[in-house]
Image (tube, rainbow over all chains, first blue to last red; front, side, top):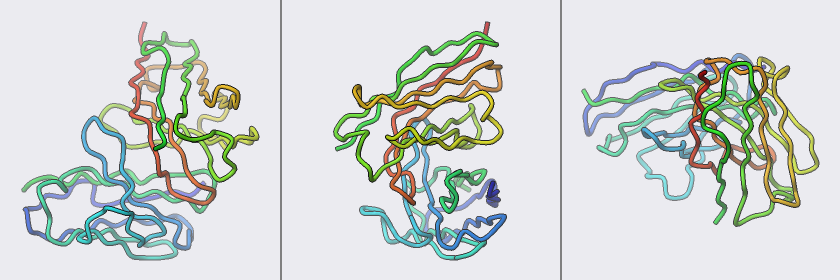
Length: 107
Length: 119
């Protein structure tokens, strides 16, 4: 199965900052990568699919890039609502796998 | 608007079988465009994909859990189910049911249900 390595595990930032989270696949997944945001006690929310396609209603300060084995999620101009945990997930294989998660916390 | 709702016992004894059902409303589980998924999240930890089923009954399972998992679908009830046998405390988690398109991200989630394994 395809392993997903996500880093950093924790990221401290302030409102207005630009932050980047990286996700690396153990083999090429083309662009079959999604990013989710999860807040405590809630189900994850899909932010980005196919590595860079923003889901409807997701603010444009979120962006995704990458292909093959290396991917990034960037949030430009952090807002208070963005402090949450973020997960990448590959869907190149029917055996879906998630990254370990990145907790974005207030500095 | 698709809704997914998990149901089942919240407390399971070690060595027993965890059984959950996911009721689908606002859509048909027989819709050929979608696959139905179980995902879990141990307390304070990350998301773990458990397995996927198609309306026809085809399944994909996490290799590390494969020997203990059965996922089934009941099209007459518009629901799908998870059975996880021989549970231990390590299986304590919030269990989510969810949906994705053919080759697609998970686009709909249930609210999740915490299942605790304890005697």
